[in-house]
Length: 312
Image 1: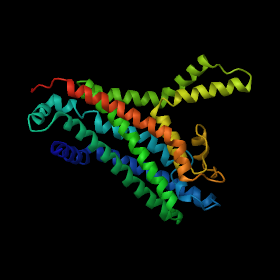
Image 2: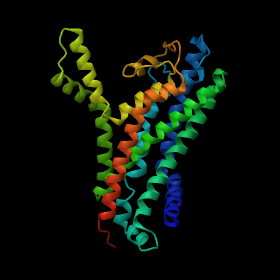
Image 3: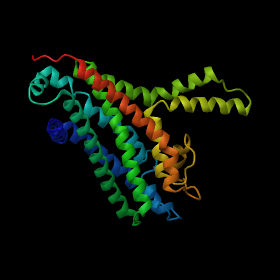
Image 4: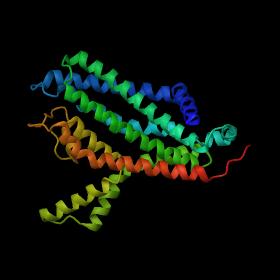
């Protein structure tokens, strides 16, 4: 346990002092501030109902600028990859990993400490950004958040941390399997690009093969259902659907809900769901994200524990 704590604090300190983390933090913060600023202007000029106005800061877009939620969906994987793509292979190539293991530190403490430090770093980064951009939005709209809105934001932060942990676990896996740092970074980014740009096309092709959309409404619905099922293989889709339901209390279904609720002219749906009901809807998505994260970390753990590490 002492070795785990030592590795955790060492990695935690390194994460906050690395220039790539500082640059990513500033980029995400600036993107969030701009998105919240545009959303607040749209809300103050259009909103009629004051219920859940504060949450609309995070889901309303304006013009060509996406909403804060869209920025988070795209930036969290980059943060997770940046924290994990060189976690093991950089130290292995420089010879510091063998020197660390020569100390009274168990091998599993190294990978557990690195992963735990990365998760805590992601949680702190997201929490600080949400507080900062929320403060900017609060100053502009002048409507404080209710207790349920705060709880929904906490649930959103928890889901975002799980999402970031998956990408960090995937990057750590590549850093163990691949020897070169640049190769592991490119492999992680390639997976991210596939899920963002090519997953939709792949899901459409599979749906056309398994359930071609004919002229009847039933066949078109069946094809759409197959496409949605294939899309939910992607962690990006799982996270996107989950946080939309959490941040849009009136959402009862997913899929097209993100596009509907992030339009500047969108209004909150009547009779919003309670937080408990929203959590019941997104629970399968969160469990799947946790399972994917656990699988990535388990494979990394087994591979790291079995490989031979020599001093260079």
